[in-house]
Length: 204
Image 1 (cartoon, one colour):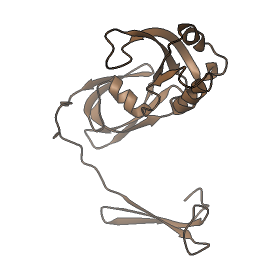
Image 2 (cartoon, helix red, strand yellow):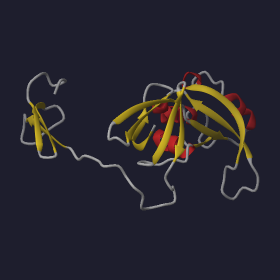
Image 3 (spheres, rainbow, N blue to C red):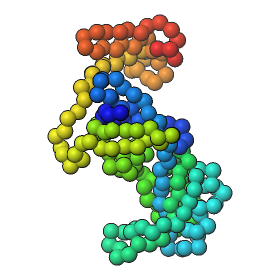
Image 4 (cartoon, rainbow, N blue to C red):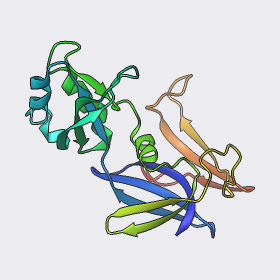
């Protein structure tokens, strides 16, 4: 199928949810089996080798291996770093904080933990938001083929519909707060308005 990447975000552990706007205007929700990796470097090779199986991080890690990477831009050769495949992309920063807490400051240098999972997913596939692609579902995996020029700054995008969402609350004070009850939700699109006033707050 062909279409434009409309949105993407981590789903359940080991999943990336991708919304594709198809050529016929329909929107399709796709699932890809995927987990991000972070990389850890250390001047203490013994500590680095032990880190992969540490009991405090093991529940958050699918797998680990030592790989060669250029750590610093000024390095002339690759260094041995530890690649950790994260079980749940939404817990990447939690894993990084646990690693930092396992030793004195500076023992571990952590890379890629601050890159949003959706951005990492796109980087790994040479894709970008609203890219026009062809995608095939192969088992639980998605195979992508880019049909856009990733160097272009002026490329075709799909026809998008603008929807305005307004939420009115029953204010308990002079200023609205997060704890105020929702009175109604108004959706406006292409001159049509839908007002949701009935049901519980969860249903609204």
